[in-house]
Image (tube, rainbow, N blue to C red; front, side, top):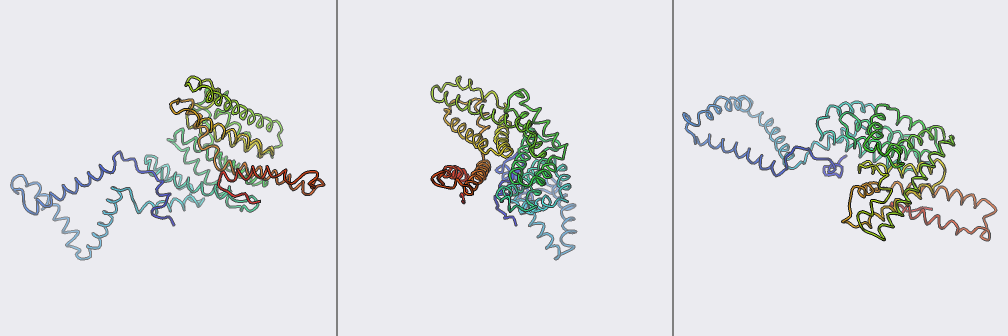
Length: 449
């Protein structure tokens, strides 16, 4: 049951009416005062019925008394119930109009939740969403509820142990992501909508790859299902690849090249990562980006320590490689970190993702050292590139990947002749445990050995 004052309700956008609530209150007060003044003037017979008040009294006698007779006196006293209900609805509407509080929205939310949770209702949801294309407010309610449900299922997926994961969670995540991306890429969708849709899809592929990497049959099936809607995929690619950073296609940080690398990842997953040439290509791309990040960090550190002139920041190569639009740069950051995680899983090298994660941390640290008075579009791009990146999930995935690797090595050591303090001491693994523990702590999770 959704509470009336729940955080989800508070996150709903307000209708764009073009007037503020203070003006609404004044407007309602003016209308009610005018009606009250007219009623009082007629009751006290302030105006001369043969002069200036003729029209007013004529309306009273020919319309008001007629309506009152047929809707009140004719059905009295049963009509009192009907008028009471109408009065209550009017008061509720008035409160909603003046305060934006509503008793209908929770019911609306529950209906949307039920509709998106049942696969048979999904086409109806899409149909109604298309029908509300002129109502920004109703579209926003759909998007907010759908995004909330998708995130809840993603959290269940990422927090669930791969060994204990049931057959329902992953397909539900795929279906909700499909529905969300389809809705975001419908007609009249903006470039930002396409970026969000691709981000959601990419996030789902990453989580599926991590949780189902040992169940390749189900992983292939779900990714194929997620990407099967060619119309939705084409809408996203057209906006992203041929978007505003098309002049940066030579850069490894352009969305066009990042998207191509993700297509490479999906192909590798489908063929069980057996194509060595494709693996080398992906590994090279991720390594080269890491090297460029390291170079950018070094240049930024040099400028921060030796010179604070605005002109000096223009000499940093990394600024020129990022997409020009801030939202594009933000997605590029997510894809850079995500591709490093994919490459780590495909090549069984967790250090690759950990290195990229540390470079993002160093980059964010150096950005905070830039004086506030020095601000330009290029620096803004880098801020968005590192905004909310790496996120909590990146830390958790890095921790899980590193933990799996060192526990595997530790188990091999325990079952070998090397299990001797004179040869290899158990304290050798303490550094790995400390590193994994610090990654878990970054997301507020305890490391249970």
